[in-house]
Image 1 (cartoon, rainbow, N blue to C red):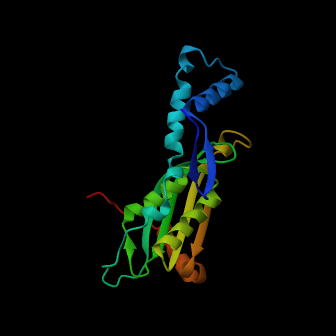
Image 2: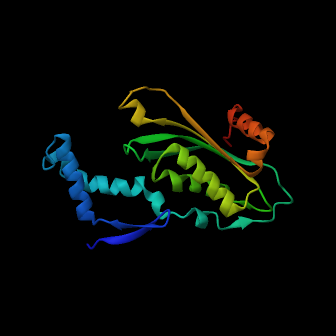
Image 3: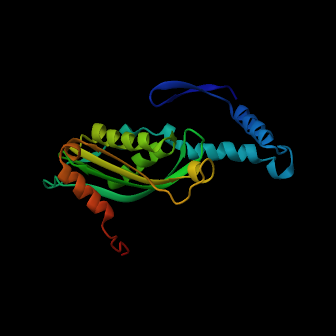
Amino acid sequence: MDAKVHQRPPSMPVTMPTKEEAEAAVRTLLAWAGDDPSREGLIDTPRRVTKAFKEYYAGYEQDPAEILDRTFAEISGYDDMVMLRDIQFSSHCEHHMAPFYGRVHVAYLPNGAVVGISKIARVVEAFAKRLQIQEAMTAQIAKAITDHLGARGVAVMIEAAHTCMSMRGVQKHDVATITTQFTGEFKTNPVMQVRFIDMVRAPKSNYSL
């Protein structure tokens, strides 16, 4: 299989290694860890790891602009907050490639149209399934919804636990990292910020039907 070039955000060409080259790299790392890549339990690990990487980093192949491309204008004049709370996500930090995971809360103020609610969750996934830092991911989600949906304002909060902190380094457990990003009316109006945070912290209802 020949190497090929993929276009990856932010529009920087990346030369992709072949599948065989990627599997060889995994074998090298297994040996670096002190194990024998040729033993029975590890013989298929390089294939499994490269397959898992396709899932972990599937966001590189997703375009938030396409996800948010279709909107619905027949909303009977609705112009108040639309909020999705507790969108679960998992990602990998770009510093140690260690997992971090948690919840994303997103709200936006429509500007004459809304988008299907599942599309907001898909935007979260598009950015989560990349090598990330939480601060950048928070800003990227807010910017994508602001730019491509034309929202009057966007609010994003991420609450996450980072295994690069709990499993290595300082090894501190049960630490939540919280980041926020506000655009438009959420940024200029503190009342809207408080309302968003109050809705995030409000007791959960029973959504079962």
